[in-house]
Image (cartoon, rainbow, N blue to C red; front, top):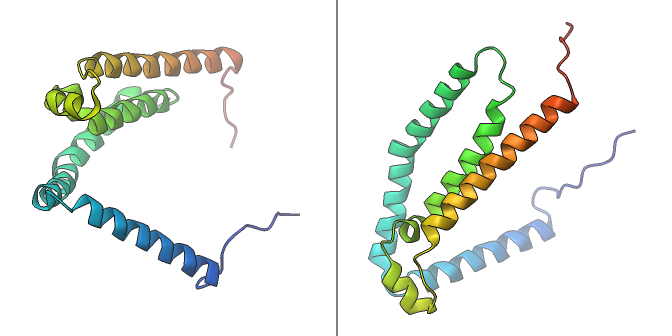
Length: 151
């Protein structure tokens, strides 16, 4: 017996209420965000979308294709490289201005915290992600030997 899935019927009052609340919250955040430097923020959003679609997406798609080709017919370890690489690149993308030191004075003025350790923290986090992935890969390989698949 299968369990019934919890789905909201299309157009149900609860779904419409949740959708209206999310639009209201997004509108509020947009008004607050674009209150001061709206042109720079809009330019950053459009630029980020263009840079992602025209530069970053082809780069990481090509890197993933090279990784898959280099792995040969047995691709058991590809996921153990993809996940920490994706998380590390996401952290780099989010914290890029602080990691590169472009906004250290602005960050320090706004938070009264030093901004000189972000590069070291990102590198340590990246090393930890890859080390954890390697430990997980080796542990799973030792625990469960691969058996030939029958068709």
